[in-house]
Amino acid sequence: MDFAFDWNLARSFLAAAEEGSFSAAARRLGLAQPTLGRHVAALEEALDVALFERVGHGLALTETGLALIEEVRAMREAAQNVALVAAGQAQALEGLVRIAASEAFSAHLLPPILAKLQHEHPAIELELVVSNQASDLRQREADLAIRHVRPTDEALIAKRIKAASPSYLYGSPTYLESLGNPSSPEELAERARVIAFDDSPLLRRVLTEAGYAFAADRFRPLCNNHLVQWELAKRGLGLCVMMEEIGDSEPMLMRAGCPTAPVVSFATWLTAHRELRTSRRIRVVFDCLERELIARLGVEQSAATDAASPEA
Image 1 (cartoon, rainbow, N blue to C red):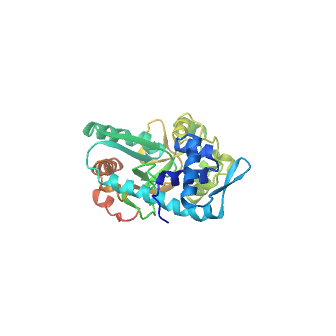
Image 2 (tube, rainbow, N blue to C red):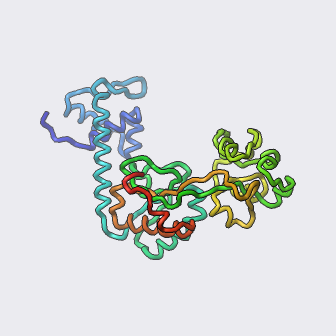
Image 3 (spheres, rainbow, N blue to C red):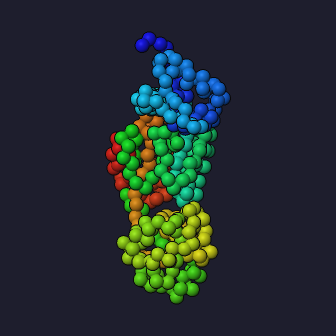
């Protein structure tokens, strides 16, 4: 076949296939619906095939469309990789850098670091992507991410900032006093409530493995925001799990149960896409985060640089 391939036509076809209708695909791409329809029709004409058939108010891929869709997805990924490589070559200390981190990390540990970065490099625009879910660096949801598990995507690199960061149960002194100041994990589990994200058994299992056998009905109130959980704990509504670097610095709360035995411990990793790591502005932000987090988490430099760079 001899024709000039137009990626815009393929992009419209891919959006229509993934959304199931021309109208939804047009909204996703910011196009007028007739324009998107013309794109698909032009691609069908260029290829001399039918890509869709109407099913009710939606679209269904034809057999040929099904055969082509994965190839077009591969083209999209290749285009994204081109953008990543190009971004990796940018050397100006200006432009946007997105950093993904958890709610607790973003609120308690990152503000002074970002303030320092903004002061030293005012032309770098910082965007903080706050979520307890892992952001997708390959899809450019973020340029850098602070994670508590080592990523496995070979397209990423990772630097271990801290091998083990212990977390404890924290409660207000008034709340613990109302419980009779339980001094053992058994007493605490029998008397206290734990503020949890949801009804998932995960937190209960983690605490049980640490020796805190809370019954299922002790996980109340529920709150899907860690920062709000922390505030609820300050008001005496229950206990909250928090990493020691944040928990021990809060004067309104104290460790509950066995104060020397963490309920869970996890590593802290700083990750970036392999190509973006070669960008000067990304490297500056990466290096600053590494340096400042090591200082704030109290880790020796030698202990923080043993992560294998090809993995993530």
